[in-house]
Amino acid sequence: MPVVFNLDVVMAQQKIRLKDLAKEIQITEANLSKLKNGHVKAIKISTLEKLCTALNCTPGNLLDFRMD
Image (cartoon, rainbow, N blue to C red; front, side, top):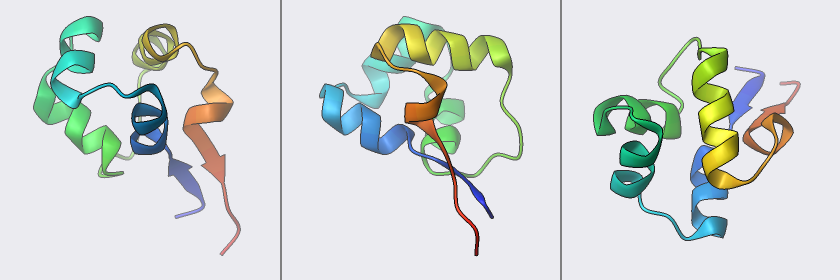
């Protein structure tokens, strides 16, 4: 898949746990885990905005495009 979600990298840089981030952005830990592990085909813009706000980053920090 050419679009890669780097949530795990950004979370590690910010030293935030999945449980804490899920609580902060009001999403279930299960759904956040799916995002973190790249097991989703879509993400809501509102969720992306919440992630960027909580992690003090931009969508470009979370998303990457790689040609196979």
